[in-house]
Length: 298
Image 1 (cartoon, rainbow, N blue to C red):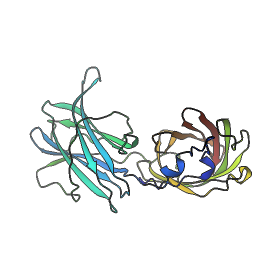
Image 2 (image 1 turned 90 degrees about the horizontal axis):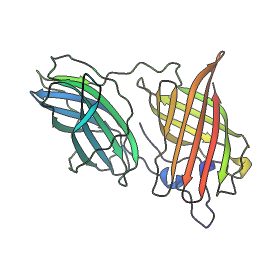
Image 3 (image 1 turned 60 degrees about the vertical axis):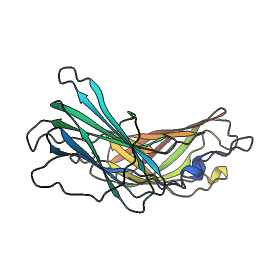
Image 4 (image 1 turned 45 degrees about the vertical axis):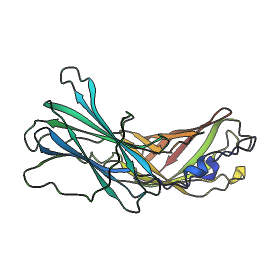
């Protein structure tokens, strides 16, 4: 997944007093996204987490945590964590992080990517069975927000194929999203509340398009365009990462030191037409708060 951070100027806020909204800064950057996560058995209690990251222009932090799962209660206990420095790279890379799981049973491996100031950019998790025979459980990949601690610097290594005799427990491809949301969508974006940004008006529908491209696991990117000409903000298309789970489509808009933004939508069908209805919010303390509703169809 990629975040080519050049978001739509209509979503930019000119804050009274000369403070500019951080969207423009966000969208000039590209952070690493997690493109793969699997666990390889090295024999006995030793394992390696293999994390694939996309090409990126920004330095970042890769976090890995390991939690055991109580089979009777389902409760989770964190047993290991590691932090890895990730330098900018113009190509996809694979990081190999060794760890030990000494007790037989189910474990959850969680991987997160954050900016250097600890804002979450992407996350994924996979489960595996320690002490299980070869060919054991394959796991699904889901989003998470658990944090990891500690600090270790590690260099990226080329993707490798497990040697003979090793067991790979990998994240299986999730069932392709139903309905399929890939393609071109059209609709509108309407601010429902605006505080501290007088140039933005509520109740005015603005033309909006989405061009969604997701893989079979429901992860990918979206080219988004909101035409704010009616507010004096004509706008340009921007690309953000996206994930699709269940009926929810979520866009990853990285937060900054002085601002944060969220955007997601629910996918449904209306007769022969597909519809995505969603919300957007932007906050820049102490005075700026904006919310919006949006809807697109295909």
